[in-house]
Image 1 (cartoon, one colour):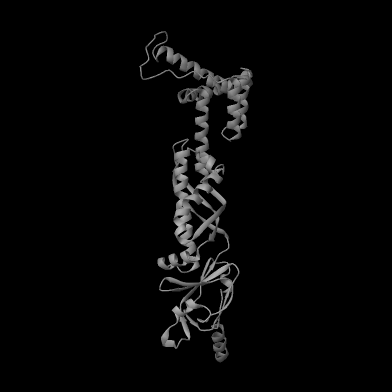
Image 2: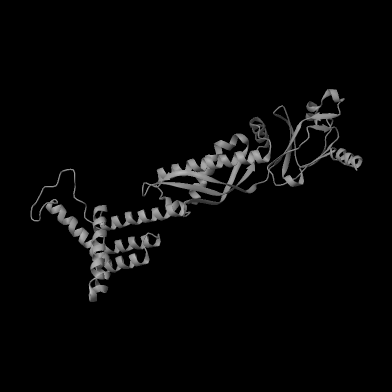
Length: 353
């Protein structure tokens, strides 16, 4: 058994090809460095074979079957070791896939990203996959050998880290420059823009390795559910304050709204009417209170006080009821307003038409 096993091993050394289990790998390094003269080398249609010695690519063979003979392949002459009598090449053989490799998965934390709409720093994650193509195999192998990353696992791990690093930097930069609300980013509204920016940002990092990121797929940015709920609540508050004419009026409106709802619960037959008036009463009373504060300066009723120069009066809301109806519809579609809140506000605005 040992004898026949030895014969089999010796026979296999006369043939070199990518191992079957490595067919899907981008880089495959043949495990033997001592290659016999006249060995048969098989290179698949979607790959090339590189011969490397002392970190330098001495030659390349394309798809097909090749008999490794220095008479037919001149560069092999530089790999022959004289002490073997000219029967052995001493070289590393790398098989590099040249077709597009799809479905390379990556993911990890982006870190705390500041939401432009609310000012909160939110822990953010990204995950997805990308496709990659080797355009210059020589650059890739020399670069990997120089880094000591000569296995496919080492290479893929390093490359995923590059993708995550650039993705993290670009998303943070886009949120600052474009002022995209984080909720819109996590909903996928800007996926194409982010993909374009990430691929562009990767180019200077991978060009020196003869690589191209072709596209990104199933690309998703996410935050925790509790953080999403917090952002939605704050976004709703911001939207309401705009409708009310400012945050102070909104806060006062919320207080008045609570008071009116309390009256409704204790008001017997007037229950339904007061509940229907609740939101409108709250905002209406808040606006009236704000106007009174502007005229009386916050003092006793009837006493006029000149407002300080640095406190300019809030600008009047010049939007028409139709414009405001359109705005609250957009807020409802965006999930900021519930159906009940939307219907109540709409009923109030319809009375003004």
